[in-house]
Image (cartoon, rainbow, N blue to C red; front, side):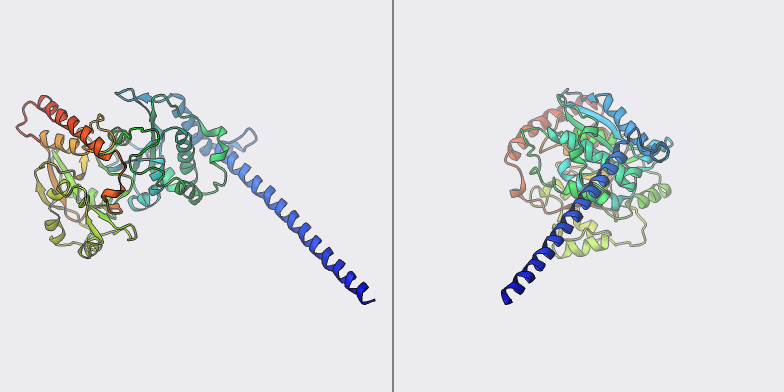
Length: 427
């Protein structure tokens, strides 16, 4: 009798467990179908379908068709014939609706897909028109096209302000990502797209792209510059951050003080420890600078490359927190200064023969000097690079590339004598 009761209780417990397991399977099946339905809905939103409600999707379909049209051209080759360029792969609402001459200042930047995740914080700080040139190679061409489209679809601020351009090798072509569903799995909003980009961060060590492919930094800078219609342009790397409210402060400054056509405005460049929060104002930056958490850009690698900025004078000058930007002092360029600056759209382009590491920015600064430009350092604006630049962080071929570009730089300087025959300046 006692044994019979135990058996009955065991059967009851076993039956209950089976019922619970069955309910769990039904629930999981429901979730799977629901998630699949969500994904199909998201995918149909991204690419539309014959059954989609046209009125609800007109805006999104227009964006899709613009991308399809941009890709259908096959891009254009750069001057060397080594790279294929898709200009204005995706245009922002700002650019699409912009009246000629209405924009005073835009930011231009460049990156591979592994640093594109920085766009989130950069745009959050800048909050104005921004032009991004992306270099992709191999499978990353498809990935970049798909994720850039997803960013413009899911992120309202990007949709409003960011123009994307794509550069790949001349033998590669970007295609419309309609068939690449794997790239869109799990994408539901802007945050999920940036989470996907995070999985590709730091895939390459600086310029060490797989297959020994050369990163065409100056071509990318020119493509990003050419993608904006503005009176002035600030060109920085994707992993750098400008000071807060720079756009409005600069616009106010040139409204008060009409700049000369041969003047560029230097933003002192710094680098910050990775763990530290990016400073927004000069006073915040100076506090970090005084305790060694912020230091001049390239201080360890090439202190001479930024020393002409005269950090001591800039840091010790009166810190104004009134929001008024002005010129603190004006300098003449000296070798080997590589300043970051806001310049008129008429400044000479970057020389696209320089690729990989070394002399890509100094060559352009050198040409500005020979062409007669003066360098006015702004009183409270700055740019900050994420992380300290240290020797061990660079790829194995850095010194070899630097040596090759040094030879190219000598030839470049000789060419400036012919380009500017009446100039007495040399570099």
